[in-house]
Length: 391
Image (cartoon, rainbow, N blue to C red; front, side):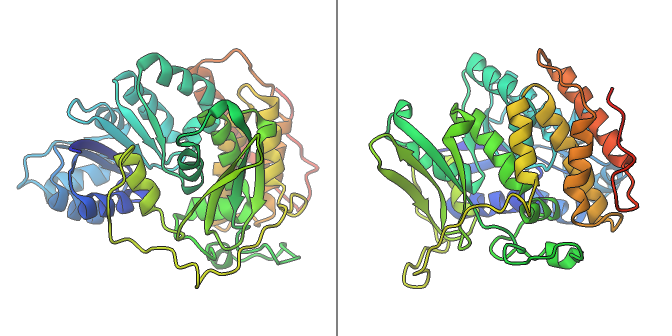
């Protein structure tokens, strides 16, 4: 099972767990890896896994790392050019894309064109440019393996079955930390970052709290599995034990269950179609003996509805929705806006945008840039009287 991989974002939550998998099962070499600014952890990873090429997105941090690993014969690249070089490194056959945000789009496309298989944890790649990316996957004869626990569960539940016999995909959501909270007007940052089941990065944790993460996953599932939007149902499952399900036309529902742990989905993406024994936590059904399901509360969490609106509108609208969300979340994390302002900003930007339907990757990048600029401008006296003008 010898495999050479590039990890984009090795110091993040998915990246560090990918390295845990590499260490656990063996047979996988890390030939290239990247980070943004976390050079202390990155240096430890470099010395442990001995990649042949590394990239630090931040130029100043890259210079510091060069000095810190001057005893090693490893080139340290920087910026988007460095990220693309890592993604297309000739000795890598699989690229694990675990960077957060739309910055993962261009290196993913570059890797696909270079003939690399993709283990995808960067959902924004398919959210913003799904139609074009899946077309490139087919044209270049490469594979895309889902790393998100929900999409991995769907992928596993499809094995050995006819895709044409799918009735619907059932995408499970934990409901986040505020599922049973009525008033969201005074949410504190520390509460929003306290996910009840999963340990994730800050941006994804906030997306989970707003249910935007589930909206992004709906769009991702549409492109990844080639189903109609009407065939995707979101179900709140607070225990996060059933990671997702597939219902077939005969009424059979096949689900994948497991502990709320990303290592198994990561491993399956790297070892598919084989399964490899590991020492990761195993599911105890006597401990998790009550599984419940609820409808999502879209009135209380409008981000999910905004994601549905974006993909129904189509064209470049999902990209605009995603860019606005990234900026809104960043503004919340910095203490600039309230939790409930996040969907207001996204809706404001979407309302002001004129969609482009016949689009290229450059159009997607332009839409992303525009949406971020607009989302940064939205101001509140806690009303939306100052609506953006449509362009």
